[in-house]
Length: 424
Image (cartoon, rainbow, N blue to C red; front, side):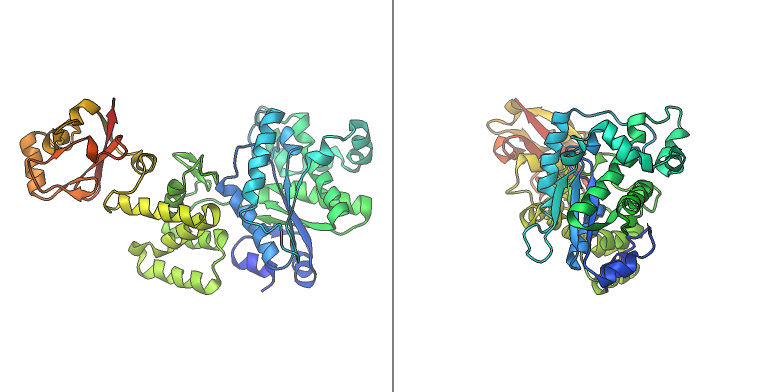
């Protein structure tokens, strides 16, 4: 397969301009996607676009990452119902540095054959002279033409309308394409389907000013099988930065993928070959309870984004949630694993010396109605302390058993967890 066929098989092509398939099959091209640093990290929605660049490079083409330090100062209206707040220049600069480091995890900037290129459009947009820009670029676009674009038309239907700065965003993105065409011979722009209007504007500008042929390819906007926008959870955005979304929570997000979505996501977010994905598809159909496809998805994406060590820790944390004995883990990891379960604060003084009876602790935490109820639960084999079954009705627990002196984990039955937070 060539890269177009690969992307098509993976379901990553929503639409493209005429000639894209032929040019990608017949010659080496440079293609770009822009990422505006309007957040402190890339998130999993961005990862879909990054994977398109990864495939481009795998097939011998040159991927270009445009970090939108200039366009982030304006704000892209595409896909937005209202204008986003403008960020301070210092904030955008900090975001850019994080973005640059994250892209290095996915693209090869060192290979001699087709190294990836990363540029910041602030380099050419910020020094622009307004009069020159309007005279040289703006005159090639009629307001009628710009009003037909979905990103503009959709905002005009909203009560707030669209500001002049956002209305001009299309011209800036078109100018980006022109600059990349001149500097790197870039003839392909990719992006989400909401970017179609901006991409075709750039193609038109290259045709008018250079008489050149350029192309566009857009990716589908992902929604889950239940109709929810991909990457948005009740807990918030899933980030690629481990400081914002821990590798454990990142792993769990993918592991919890709906059976109806998991094969699509394996195609979108991994480099697994067709044979392996088709094998996993059969596994979903025949043995969905094993969740082998979800486990493979979680492993592949977590390894790619966070590395082998972080994957191992995330998998260990996942096994703890399903009953593996709790040892050699940090208090921070316990907080991440059990942060959403019910919890009770217990004073450190109650756990010093001989400590407290497990039956008494069960009552404090609401896992038993009385100490005698607690004894019955223990005798029935249904109580666990740090995932180790309690067998002695007179067992006590003290501060020595607490994880870093901060947490104890109680469990009743298979899944009824309770976190004991030790306070001074």
